[in-house]
Image 1 (cartoon, rainbow, N blue to C red):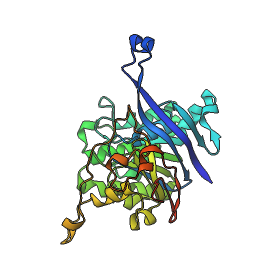
Image 2: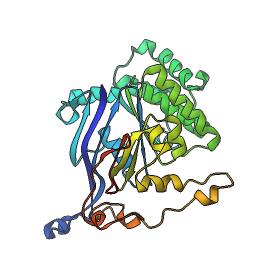
Image 3: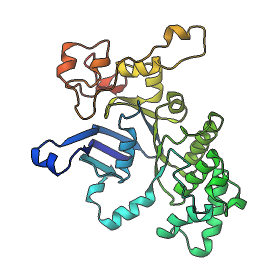
Image 4: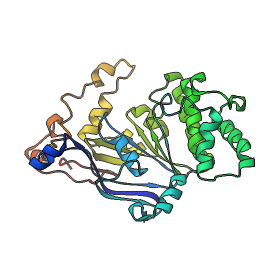
Length: 321
């Protein structure tokens, strides 16, 4: 059963749209997400991968209701979220949580650890007040933070410890689904593997489902079940992690893999830089969004947008197939 389904999701942000621009009909929009569809089964991890600005984080925030979609639908347990009443949306917040990228800005510096974690517990009446402290201590133990730190402030912790506290805050709601938005990119390399392993352990223990957002393919390979490669607000390739890492088929996916430097004698032969710039998301190109940077581009690529189709066990959007 699919826990989450996203169908033809679009999200546009207005820019330079003052009264004069609206009267003149000169409104402009950043097309952050452009017709994205995917599903996530209960207990699995789907990773969204791509260059900065490709719409990964926008999808995550729109799924959680932090942004209102411009078009498309989001279903949770086969129910369209837009049809939910305000009470149902409030209850849904317990099931869907987020781990933020920056552990330095995502925690309130004026609150102690106990207050940071207890706030959502009280708002949603997760446990009785007399059970609250034991519940928080158990959460801290699960994420590897000493319970004696309850009365400390965020500035008294390292980045890795802060992210563990952020994870504990997310778990406090007893969620089923978590959006992890680049959760280790702001951490030291020595700490990243610890946080990844923690997330995988918690997933197994609590049956969590992850939408994991990242740009680092080595991280994605470690934690994912399936991978979706994004470019300019669209999914270009989506499938099983093993298939995509063993044999990427879309030219953009291949370019991403070839741009990873390897510490080997042959690394200079394989390593290459993806040339050209990402097109302007305000004025989207015609045809395939990648055609201006693709060495295989044909006339049809400039005119007709490719749709996702089955290719070698995964879906890819490319006129080569």
